[in-house]
Image (cartoon, rainbow, N blue to C red; front, side, top):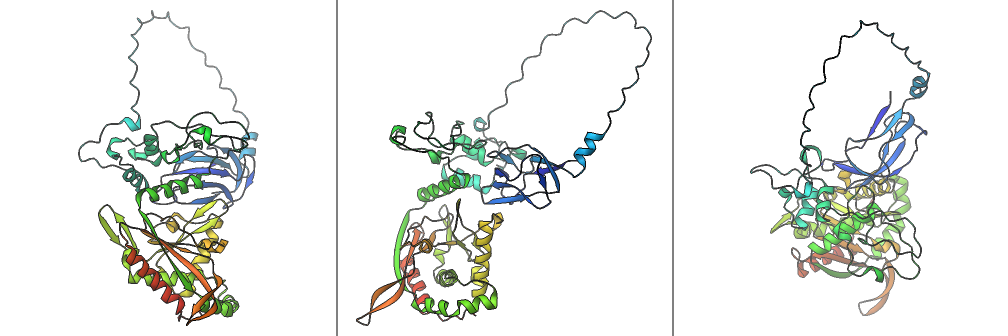
Length: 451
C-alpha cells in the first residue's frame, strides 16, 4: 500500500511550506530517511527525508508550490506494492441475474423547475469584520506583517485550517489579489511583459515589498539577463525592507586592538582542536565580549512592542551565516550561560547544519542580539541592517595589522573595526558608544582561559 509523504510542520507557528526542489523523480528508488525534497518556510530551509523505503510513485505538489502542513505531496510505493498490483488478476464478471419481465413503465414525472444558482463564496480579503468577541486566528508572522502595514486582521477571512489567516491571505490582500506570472529563468535582450517588476514564484503571492520606483524602461535596456529571486532571497528582501522601514537606524564605529587575542589563538589553536575536536575561531571571543556588554547595558538586549520596551533576561545571540544561496541567522541560545568551549561548539554545530539545511525552526528564533562578520570576506567594516525584533546588531570588520600610536610611538598592531547598528527609538548614541567601549575593554584586556 502506498505511503503518503506529507508537508511537515517545522514549528508551532508555521502552517505552510514551499517545495523548492525535488531530489527524486517518479520511478526512482528511495531509502527511508534519505533526503527526498527541499522546502522553504517563513523561518528556515530544510531537506525532508523519505518516511519509508520503496519507489517514488507520484509527485502531487510541484516545485515552487506552497501548501498547508499535512498536505500529501507525494506517494511512495513499498518494494513489492507495484508488482503485486500489476500481477493481481482481474475479478471475474458477476453473473447476470435473470429477472422477470418488467411491468409497464409509469409515465415520467412532470419536469421540476431548476433550482436557483448558489451564490459564489466570498473572497478572503473582502470578508466583513468578525463577530464581537470572536478571536482572530493567525501566526506571529502574519500579525507582524499586519502591524507593519496597519491591516485590521478582523476584516480578513482566513483560508487556513479552522479559518486561520495565513501569510498568503494577507499578502494577497496587500497586493489586491493581483499576482504576476512567473518570469523565465534566463532571458537575454527581450523586455518581459508589463506588470509588477518582481516575478512571482508559482503558488505564492507577490509582496508589495517588491514594487519598483522607476519606470520599467529604465531597468530593461541593452544586454541583460533576468533571473527570478529565490524564495530565500525574497524573504531576506522582505525582512530587510521591513527593518529599514520600522527602525530608525543609527551607526556607531570603534576600533579595537586585538593583538593579544590574535597571539593567543595562534598559540593555542592546534592544542584546542587536539583536546576538544573543535576548530578555534575568533567568533567566541566577540560573543563573550558582547555578552558582557549586554549585561552592562540591557537596553541593547531588547525589543520594542509599540510604546513598550521589552528587556530580555535571556541573552540569545544570533550569528549570521553566509550560504551559497542566501543568508541565515541561527541563534546561540543562553549564550551567557556557556563557557568558551560551549560557545565554539554551538557555533560550529549551527553553522554546519545551516549549510546542510538541517536547522530546526526554533534554532533561528528568539534571538535578542545579532552579530555579523563581513570581515571574514575581507570587509574593512560594515553597517548591517538590524535583524527584527532586535534593536541592535554588531558588525565585525577584518582583523588586519595597522600602524597605531602607543605612548607616542608607532607600533604595528592587529586591529579590527566594530560597528553597531541600533534602533534610535530605544538606544541612544551615548549608550551605543558605552556599549562599544565595554566590548573594547573586554577584548583588549582578555583574561579568560580558553582551555
